Length: 320
Image 1 (cartoon, rainbow, N blue to C red):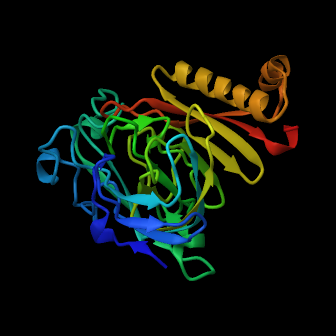
Image 2 (cartoon, rainbow, N blue to C red):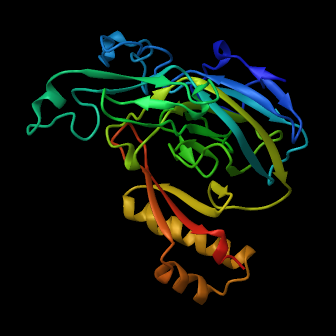
């Protein structure tokens, strides 16, 4: 099986000029080993998020959130849709969350001075599950609080059309740092292609995350992703899409949040009209009346130039 090892997973931009690290055929299973968002800086509670102590934080934007790639997919052309099928994510033995002065929405809090007056790093041990790995393991938040590891890929996408976007604040129809927890094993991620071979990148694994990723960091971790690609020839989609076994999700990144939500709903309606034989009237009324229609606010954190990320989800049982 082909693999990108962790020591090569240190790109900090989605750049169409990069030479491919891997060439794969559609349907070929391969692996990518990733760093966490800090490129291994956070190992213990004593590793604080002090910018002066962190390598790459003398650059603007900082060299954080490393990605691996690009992966060249044989036979893929501009105008196609690349489908990433995520088979498995095995995360490392721990994850971390780091807060402190001027980090996130409470980095200047006067109500809770411990959030804005000192740097805090929390390390969460991972306990292997029945498989003997973290694939089905547990995250230990405190001695009394734990939950199942629910891994996903925080940053993935293909090279944008003409621009170069950083891995820390780049976002667009092509992907980027979106922190969508549904970019997870068992799901299919659809991305529009702008270059021959697609030029796919991936990194920034999470062991778990709550809605909005409010602090700006979730349970950040290293790990290994096993995946494969499918290709849909000459198809247009407005933004990254997700197909789960039992539902579909249309996404959008924008500010303010209401624009992201409104646009994600419109993307979902267009999906229903264009591919599932809904009339515009039925699609419009469905998203307003269906009790199983859901809006997700995946990412709403105050970091760099990041937009807010929303998803509009509808179960497959309502599709025609």
